[in-house]
Length: 114
View 1: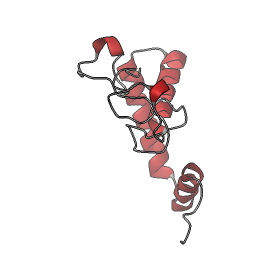
View 2 (view 1 turned 180 degrees about the vertical axis):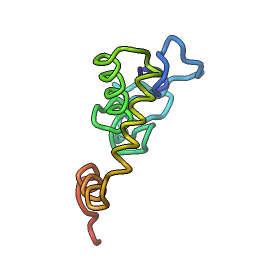
View 3 (view 1 turned 30 degrees about the horizontal axis):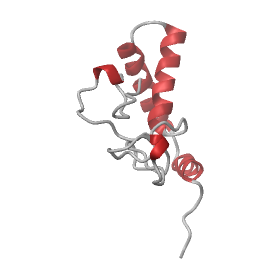
């Protein structure tokens, strides 16, 4: 669950304790998305996408946890623990080459030599 006021995961806007809202597009306060002229900037990973982007790691992690819960039952906490166990298994068996390949695919290729 993403807070639509503060743009963080873990609570909804009705339970948010932050005093001021931040823009979903640029992550700064004082305005709303429809008035934002800034380039996208994610408050989670400092990437060049909005906090509402469906392709960034935190969103994908939350989706995987919810999918696990839906398929296997139990609580969110149980699903999160199971997800972490699965990720750790994947990481411990992953080769260096596959890690580099994943990094290249998710970051858009090799950096330019300018």
